[in-house]
Length: 313
Ligand code: NAP
Image (cartoon, rainbow, N blue to C red):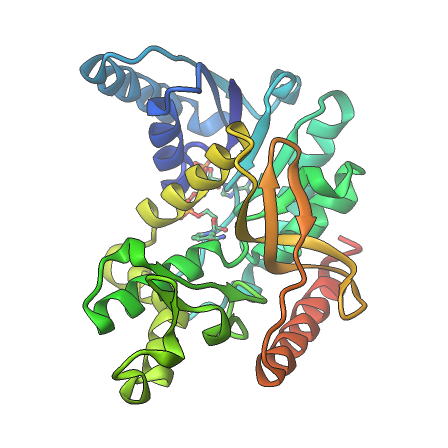
């Protein structure tokens, strides 16, 4: 399978290229960036080849400038983490206008000559996913964003640590905006299949503290090491794997809503979706508590406001 990574010179772009190159089903990766970053891409390519040699794995890695996006043709998935990242004290929304121009440039260029699935990472990811959908004119199943998948992983870690259980025993998710209004779903949280609310010690769970910790997870990593890469890159690989293997797993990605959840439409936001070989195969409208739903509707409003600021860029 061939994939393309646009913005491969960045933290997330290079980390995900490295992880994907090691996956057994990947045999070709296009690393794409601006002209000024081609030397860096060539360095990343050589470094990955060394790692592949150590692992006894083969894959073709090509370096391309953004000036020829036709090379994307034949890519099952095109991953886009290109964009300016947050620095200290910036919100994800502060990036919206600048990053909307970048998404428009790349998605416009790709969709002219290629058919691929667009997987958007650039923040604010929900709004950028909608920008990609609109600018590409692709079908909605083909265009999705990382959404709250990474936040769900962060929530999972916090729950596992609190209860002192194996990470793999925790099932949980966060829906809504990949941002301050994200909505953790206690109603969809279980350990070893047992709803969290029925477990001993649940009543002592420092819920708000955990939620605040998860919400500020990205900011904390920026302060400590400049930005996150292993977390997002591994979350991206999860999704790519799911599509390649036609796994039909329920992940929480940014997807376009057309009324599936209580009539909410014309917004891309983090919701549970079934992921398989066609990308987003179905939006899954799960039952959540009234309080969670109220918070989700607020999150939708915030994302729509941001979308209104960038839709005409
Ligand atoms: P980074 O290390 O600064 O990399 C940014 C990438 O974008 C580089 O390849 C850079 O290319 C490219 N780029 C920057 N400005 C550009 C422009 N004007 N035109 C074209 N390309 C440009 O940032 P990062 O940490 O990898 O983060 C990338 C994006 O992912 C950010 O928007 C960040 O907020 C977002 N993110 C999303 C999630 C999520 O869960 N969705 C999590 C973390 C981060 P050059 O090398 O040429 O400068």
